[in-house]
Image (cartoon, rainbow, N blue to C red; front, side, top):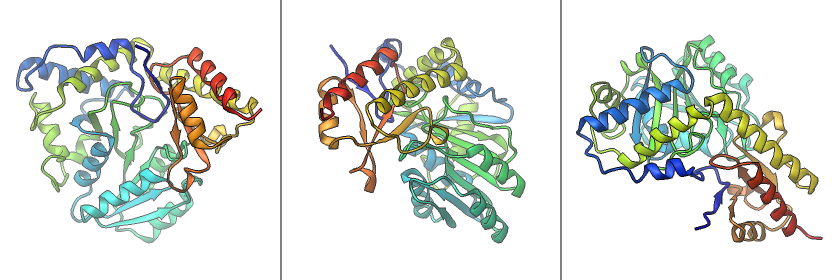
Length: 357
């Protein structure tokens, strides 16, 4: 069967190796074999960025990336804490929404969706509001394909002694993340993006020290409770076992292919191939390369989106529209998943065929 190639920002096109892992035997989540699976995944997740398990905990959850973000925010900002969210896209706005729903004291530094984070404005807010204890931001804002200055923000948080909670859902495994900054406290991510697993498994990489003062605003998304149970080779609830099988295999494949450096290099090459090919066709990117993620980039529509989407879908490619007010002007292409240069060359040929002559 010819499977479509997914150029949307997750879920991704799976390798045969990961897809076949879904056929492994059914497994009870209270048996030792499941805890071996869970332990390996947690160890490999920390290994992606070479993190010390004595300092960091990889907390596995069942849910989408948003579940990981919600667990992070609702658990790690204490009742007396105050959160500052740095927004410049849909997913920053979602973090604010999560905080508000949990009754977390929250304020916002907001930029236009097409603008970078304003670190000077963040500095001013931290100077003016010493009650702020935590800052939340999105690393790769897939609304536009912008790679936000997360490492610089982490340095700023370290300077002011506040904790950074990062949405790395669309960057973990493919973009540089400086966990060494004292202010960097947690990163929420998912299996089905840069790690090439399947939907249903997500995780938070969190400093163990932060878990000691965690709140428990929810039953299911209590990050500290999940971490304690997993450290003791347990699980508080029934996880998505087959999604875990796929994540383990994806992490093994990730390591076999060269780890973070190789994954970033692959994405960089594919994203560059697409950008260069579209430039030849007169299709312009939204952002300069230096401000863009290697994971996904946004482009100005050369024709009506429905024509572009439907024409490419008929040829086996799934692209993504812009969001909100950008839907009528942009389309997005991700280079995550089991894709190669030949796939991108064929994509560019099909785009060419859809443009006016």
